[in-house]
Image 1 (cartoon, rainbow, N blue to C red):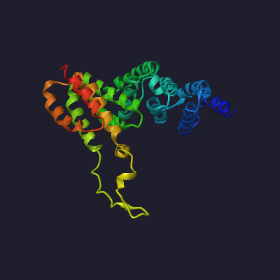
Image 2 (spheres, one colour):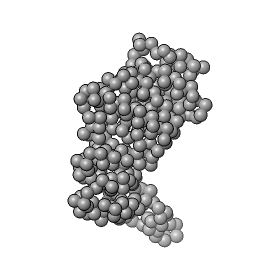
Image 3 (spheres, helix red, strand yellow):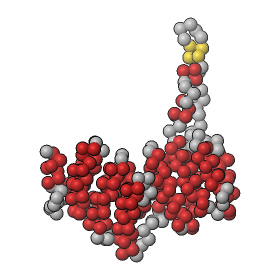
Image 4 (cartoon, helix red, strand yellow):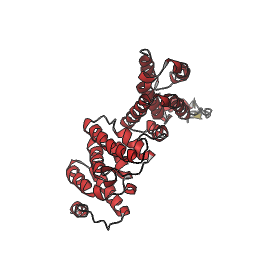
Length: 278
């Protein structure tokens, strides 16, 4: 009944409803999509009905869901709704670097249906950018997507890596700056220096036990909470390898000396193997 009531207010959505309330409705419908199959069809239908009434300021929840949705069904529903949103469907959405970066990233979804919907959505945004005389891919693309290389979900890291690499391959003037940013991002996510070991503890028998005695061999790895970011960097480097020039190799190999000592060295190795074909 609650969903029926919500759907009733979505189709057709009265223009008198404030955008803030419409955005709240969109968030509620998106949350239903993550609660199980029984909600997918009605929530998706309601989103499609609501979308034409959404203005640019109400689209962020849908845009975020298009790349971070917990399932392909979730992401696809968000993208299909975005293609019906008037600002994008009619080609008058103001250029927005954050929006552009996320829509570009959505095109590299591993799910074919999502990738196809994202490509259609990108064409809508591209038309809006052209109407303003601007390039669809913003100069700040790298700044927008680099943090996603450290996402907890591997799918998001891989998507961001492919999105960054493809933009650089399309416009090779981006490659040098991207390499420098990747190296800096890797350094920033490196493990902090280990603190000095605490003194040994003593049991009831008086025997001393070193602090490491009760720790598993994987404790250090578990405490390294930034490995995802370095993994994302390695994925991006591997995707970027075909577009890298010989002149850029010295900088890359200097970086890899440290990368090979990292817990994501296997992915760095994939990058080196790709470089062999340059």
